[in-house]
Length: 166
Image (cartoon, rainbow, N blue to C red):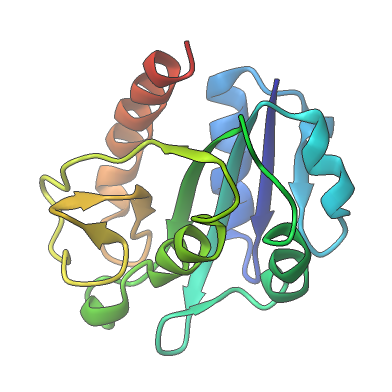
């Protein structure tokens, strides 16, 4: 079972979470805003999609801080986790989608297995925390400057997730 947890200030990450849910067949009640969710809800899912926009100089969306503090104390052993997020690669190339890197680092000792990494072909920005060993650790979307590429990026990533969830 898939649970999607996101933090969104302007609605872009929320819209992305809802689009991913639709493409993966995830019910609306399995899509959670971390501002309103309890970390206890995570236990009911085998697969977690965690999404955050990146703010300021590479920071998480505000609602994530309290949720993540509790989540990283839990064992996520046996769960597969995929990360997604939004950022501005043109104005902030050095911190583009850094929130994904923050989530990745915070949960790296939780026992989960990360899925959804890919080679960032066609991206202008690859020098931030979202890029590790030449791969993006999750779906990175730039609605500010590359919105024309968003549908293709989502479709390709969803197909990859489907194969990694089997």
